[in-house]
Length: 89
Image 1 (tube, rainbow, N blue to C red):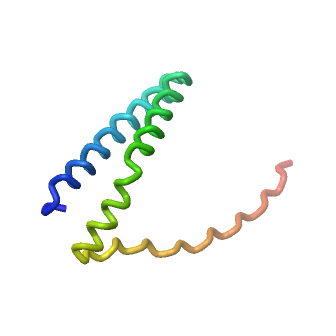
Image 2: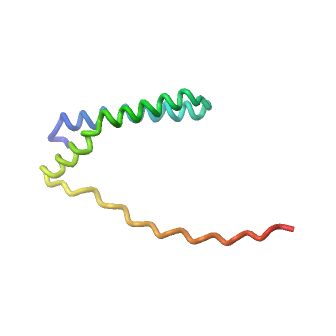
Image 3: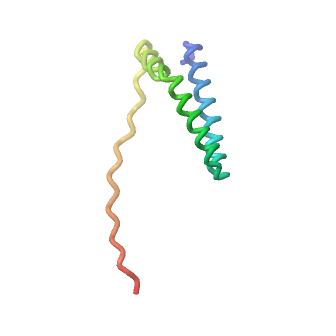
């Protein structure tokens, strides 16, 4: 996105705020601060709602520059079922 500085700034701002809020969530979890964790989680939801247009802007940028979409990760094979434990005597 080097040729679109506004979009680049918008993405950088969003990622910076998201990282700051995620750090506060982790800090609150480690401190077992339920109120702080809930407040930071709501702040993260508000940030996401305020930047809903960002995904559309990135998609439009990709369509206009004919940038191919990121490759999809290969599908993972389902995990093998675990063997049932036999009760210990």
